[in-house]
Image (cartoon, rainbow, N blue to C red; front, top):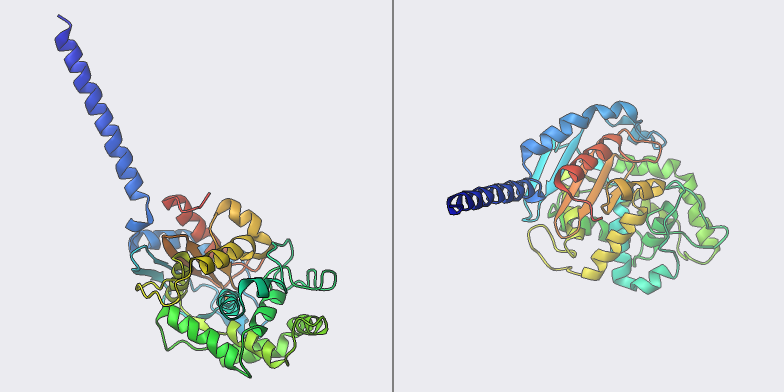
Length: 337
C-alpha cells in the first residue's frame, strides 16, 4: 500500500534535484566571463564612474594634468579573442608604467631571465613606484615594476640611440595588431624635463655599474612611458600575457609559457606598487597600473581586461579603474584564489 506514496516521493525528489542542478548550472554559466556582454560592461562602468571625484589626476608630469578627469573606458578581450569595449573607447592615454611589462619581456628575450634578475630582485615592496628603495643599501632595484628596476630593464635592451625604444613600440604594435600606435612627443618632452628623480636613479645605478650607457637609455624609458593607446588596445596586451604570449587573434609568434608566468607573477606582486598586497587580496589577478590612468589585467588562460580613468588614488592607481575591476571580479568569479 506504500508503493504509490514512495513512487510519488521519488518523483518529487527527482524533480527537486533536477531543478536545483538546472539552477546551479545556469548560475555558473551566467557568471563566466565567456558570457560577458557590452550591456554588462556598461552597467559596471555607469555604477562606478563617479568615483573619479575621489581621485586626483597626476600633475607632477605637466602634460598628464591636462587629461579629462571624467573620461572613462572599460574593455575586455574574452577567451575567444573577441574585443568588447564601452565608454570612451576612442580616448587615447599614455601607457606609463604599464610599458614596463613589454620592456621586461624584451630584456629577458635578449639576455635571459637569470642575467636580468642578477641585477634586480623579484621582491614586492611597501614603497611608492618612484621610491629609491634599496638602491643605496643592496645596490640593485627591488623589482622591474618600480621605476628604478624599469629604467634598468630598458637599458638592457640592445641597440644604440632610440633602437631599444623602437623595439618596445613595435612589440606593442604587434600585440595590439595596431601599427598606427605611437608615442606622445609632448608627454615625452614633459617627462624628460621634469624627470629628475628618475635621472637620479639612473645615475645611482650607473655609479654601481648596473648601467653602462649614456642618458639616451633614460630617454628611451621616458619615450616608452609616453606610448599612447586605447583601453581596447590595452586589453589585448592583458590577453597576450594571460595566454602564454599568444595574440588575441591566435598568432603564436612569441608563444612562451615561461615568459607569461614571469610577467604575470611580477604584475601580481608589484604591479600595483605598495597597494599590490591588498589588491591581491581583493582582486586576486595579475595587474599593472600606470599614472596615465590605465590598469591592465590578465585573467590567466581566460581574458584580458583594461580600464581607463585618469584620477588616481594615493598609490598612483586609477580610482574608478580599481572599482570597475573589483566589480567584474566579484560578478564573474575571476580571482585566482
